[in-house]
Amino acid sequence: MNLIEPAFDLADPRTWDNVGKPWPSNEQRMLTCCRVIDETHDVRTFQFRTDDGLPVRFEPGQFMTVSASARGRPVERCYTISSPPTRPYLLSITVKRVAGGVMSNWLHEDMRPGCRLQAYGPSGTFTPTVSSAPKLLYLSAGSGVTPLMSMTRASIDLGLDRDIAFVHSARTPADIVFQKELHRLAALSPRLRVFFVCEGTGDEPDWTGPTGRLNLRLLAERIPDYAERETFTCGPAGYMSAVKKLLDEGGCDPERYHQERFDIAPPAGFEDDIVAQTTFTVRLARSARSFTMNASETVLAAAKRNGVAIASSCSQGVCGTCKTKLIEGDVDMRHNGGIRDREVQKGFRLLCCSRPSSDLLLDL
Ligand SMILES: Cc1cc2nc3c(=O)[nH]c(=O)nc-3n(C[C@H](O)[C@H](O)[C@H](O)COP(=O)(O)OP(=O)(O)OC[C@H]3O[C@@H](n4cnc5c(N)ncnc54)[C@H](O)[C@@H]3O)c2cc1C
Image (tube, rainbow, N blue to C red; front, side):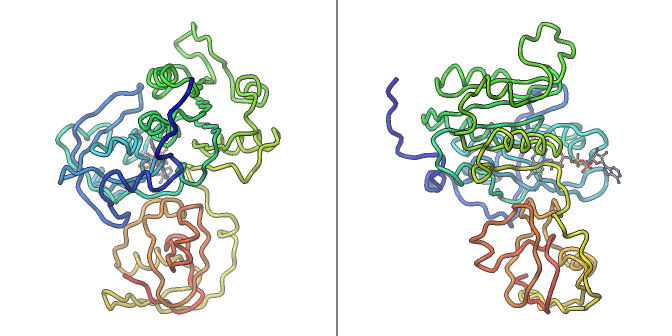
């Protein structure tokens, strides 16, 4: 089949400049829920529109930090925008109910059409604009399907028909999120291949797909050219480390591997450091406030202790919500991918994973 050469590509950031209005990641807006969709027994999609009703600009794979007063206390959590930026009037998040989890249960129980939710603008670097590779491998598990779904939907909506091999792992067939839609998209797009791996068959003994966990033999059998592909992977920590090991064994180039984690480990090495008990002064340029802090604390923790309100979510250098410009001074920042090199070069830092090594002046 001959494809029309597209004017735009997923990998070209200009594609997204043309769609929707910017919404800065440090700016809160109100969203109104307009639809709730049951995806599986414990996963729901919540669709929102903005107050002004105007389209929003974002890149496929990015997330929003949502804030709510859930169970009587303020909570902020990150959720990937599962809808594609090619449909910029409605922003969807697809949330798995986590046992004992504050925000996911609150959303599942209380979020209904007409309800309002506060959110920060789209953020995150797990997007296809980091690579223009012609062949892609999307690997996800559980709710980690959401960023890859946004990327896949965007590719189809743009008529790109990108060469995507999408492998999703789930506990049982009943836990596969977006199963029908992914099959439908694969039927539309000859170069999108989708397959699901289930740990067990659960209540569906007729399941004919592969069972167990994803392994190299299965991957090589289904996607023989997997090592040639740029890989994007998202899921729980255990899955991510197993996938990384498997791809390393399979000879995949680590430079062509991109990942997003939903559950976050402390940045490597940070927790073990012995930091001298030195005290530094932090001045806030815009509010003319100041406080002192110990070198062993993160700037975010010290700011909160001193009553300074700073938007934050993951506290692990992933989500980028607390990104702030450092006007003077130095910090030791150990992030988990929540800030781009060019932002660091412009002086921005993530306060949640930065400890001071001098007095600081922040653009706050
Ligand atoms: C960039 C990013 C994107 C994400 N995108 C998505 C997405 O698209 N969809 C999605 O479903 N999730 C996503 N997440 C995960 C999401 O942000 C939340 O972490 C998840 O919904 C759980 O939040 P919660 O408030 O329900 O649970 P939490 O209240 O944070 O609890 C999480 C777990 O910890 C346990 N716990 C909580 N407090 C304690 C305690 N004091 N002692 C012991 N255990 C405790 C709970 O029982 C629960 O098992 C994303 C995360 C990131 C970082």
